[in-house]
Every structure is written in structure tokens, then in C-alpha cells.
Image (cartoon, one colour):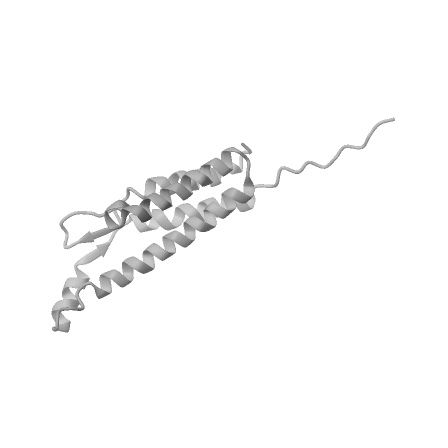
Length: 141
């Protein structure tokens, strides 16, 4: 594994770790990680990270690149879904003040930073790694 591939490898490891980090804290009771929010989606993100690690270890740049971009897309989709779910969770309450107060009680936690940074780090690591093509040497007679 080339030395610059360690950056991409680290990004995919961080993506695996970030699935267990706290993402939301509703009403200050307990923190929720990705598996508490939506377990099948968490397993898909974990699978993308494992495929990315395999792409880095087996020197398959295209697979690692695809996994990095897929991981970033999944994280963005998750953030949009969480944002919309939080802002629509209390829409059944007819009083806007109470609904707004309850919505403000759901806090975003530090796990989002790690969840966004991990695939970006994997993409940057993959972009800085040169391809394994070696120029042919001249033949001696």
C-alpha cells in the first residue's frame, strides 16, 4: 500500500468509527448514533467503508474512489433526512410556539463533523495517490 494511501485508509476507518459517534440528542436524554437513527442505513454506510478499505488495501483506486464518493453522498442524504425529520416531527401540534420549542430541544452532536470529515478525507487521500502505472524502461541491446 503506497504511503499516500494511508490518508484514504484513515478516512474509511474514521467513517466506520463515525457510525458509532453521537449524532442527535433529543431532549437531553440520550445520544443517538447512526444505528439508533436508522439501522439499515447505518449498515450500508459501514459496508461502503469496508468496500473502501478493501479498495485501498487491494490497490483498486477506482473502487476506493467510488466508495469515497458513495460515502459522502450517503452522509449528505442522511443529514438532509435528519434535518427534515427534526423539523417535521412536531408538525402535528397546532401551536407553532410549542412545536418550535420541541424542535429546538433536539440537538446536533459532534459526530456529524466526523461523519462528514471521514469520506472527504478518503476522497482527498485517493486524489493525492498516484496511479500504479510505471513507465517502461528502455531496452538494452
